[in-house]
Image (cartoon, rainbow, N blue to C red; front, top):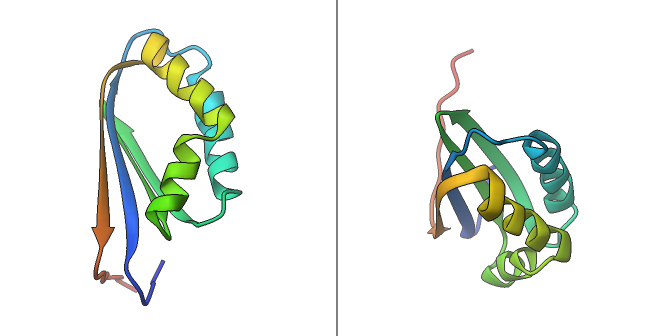
Length: 103
């Protein structure tokens, strides 16, 4: 994901309840749907007690449109009602990036 111009990252950090029935299916559905959204660049996710999902977007408008997407709104509601004890969302502008890769 090497971009030449600045872009945005949405960092979603969370802890889950013990009641996660349906969560894996919804998470997969949301990833598929996000990838179809205009302005979507990529996604990285990890969960080991604390969950962290970072999605990357071309603009703040693309992020706003994703947040307002009707199926995403349903997933957000189910998350608050059933799956999450806590979550925190951060939106950041990525000015620069670099990586290391051992070959």
